Amino acid sequence: MPCHETVTCPCCKAAFECRVGTILRCQCQQVPLTEDERQYISERFSGCLCAACLQAMKLGYRQEKFKQRLQNIFTLSGKR
Image (cartoon, rainbow, N blue to C red; front, side):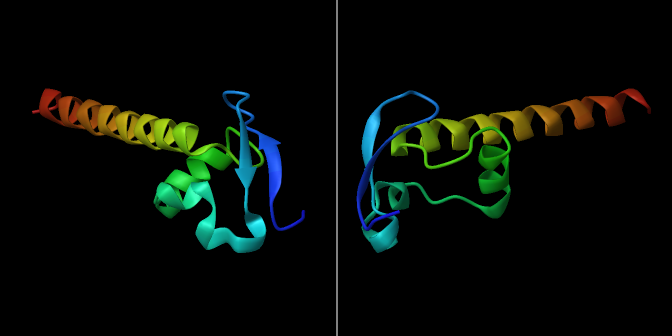
């Protein structure tokens, strides 16, 4: 992949400039991700996502984890 390439986001189909050659200036750097969030996204999409979709996927991951924690709490409280 060259330094800069216009790619299509596999999630929303929007075109954006991927700067894999200068990754610190790439739009994806706007969205800090944990390793768990990266894995969650990579299990659903291959390739680069636009910053808006990265942010939405990050939010989706956090909501899913929150729901799981709530279910665990309710399950544990029900066993008492």
